[in-house]
Length: 225
Image (cartoon, rainbow, N blue to C red; front, side):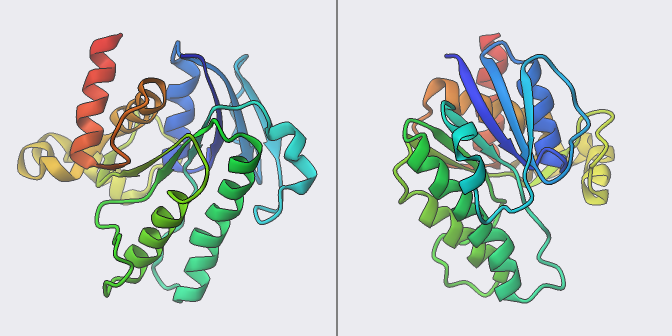
């Protein structure tokens, strides 16, 4: 499959890793990076579109047509945030992009990064998990070809990643031990990015992909190369 992908969040840790993997992957034909600031990457496969308002895409809609995948990697920590504010920068922001893309490119596969512990019931006590769960649920109601919801736990960054969070750097340093102690809650950035690309290219049947699913799909991806 020739994947033509839009990537949101390429200046963050997950987005940076997904972009790097996509640019080197033979099944990815082209990549459009959408961000508020340049991601600092240049590549023949890649175009970059700087856009300031992630709640309104009307000015750039014509440039979003013709893609069959979206890797939506934008996200912020909920620490210190009120629920209304976190909902705006998580649910509202994601849905505005997704609604636009589902209208312009209904044959698209939309891949969304949530996290281990996301609350699909939307009723739990943990604020971020409820908001992420609501986002997952509403995404699945949109007229995309497919929506895949990725729930990684701790992520070991790629070597040399610029935007790795401190907790991810710690997870990377302790990776061999964590892989033995809590294998269901840790994956590598290579595995996460590889699983996202594989899910698009193979039309994977599962929609909600927990950390163990991510690792399993990534191994299938590695075996296929």
